Length: 215
Image 1 (tube, rainbow, N blue to C red):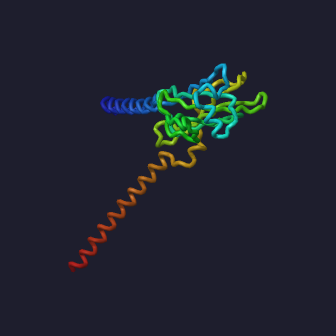
Image 2 (cartoon, one colour):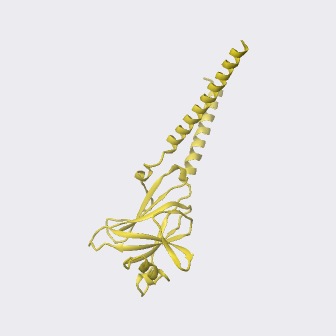
Image 3 (tube, rainbow, N blue to C red):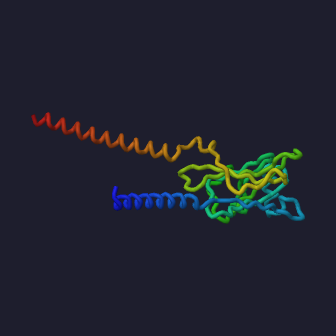
């Protein structure tokens, strides 16, 4: 192999590596949501920190929560299909409605929380000493069509063996009801090939029929 061929192969390899790095870098630096949790502390009961919250809690038949916190999306990307539950505690998610007669609504899943927006969390702590207690966030990463579900825990009690995690953990069990990107692409390709074969079969059938009529 001469020097010119080696140079061509080397140039092709460099181009391939550069393209691969660009794809990886775009994926690695994609916008992601993250959560900042702030407990609303004051010299009053927790439900009186936010105007109208006590009346709403009473109207829903809830007992007074032990903790009221705000969870703000302080990441660089929006969060999708957000839900919150508790470990060693019970959590209800509220969002403001802007309606005077019903200022809050509790939701199982919030379709989207933009950057800088927050939700209100009512937390009822379990009276179990030394039990792990955490607020658990679930959401779907961008792009949402990939249905990559993750979760992240925010620990409420101080334990030496627990450190607040910086990165969310994958949650494949939430993806079980959705097709992966590869499976969905393969199904779409199969449908297109079937439609193409069907059209060609119809054209061939018409050609054969026309030939018989001419005879």
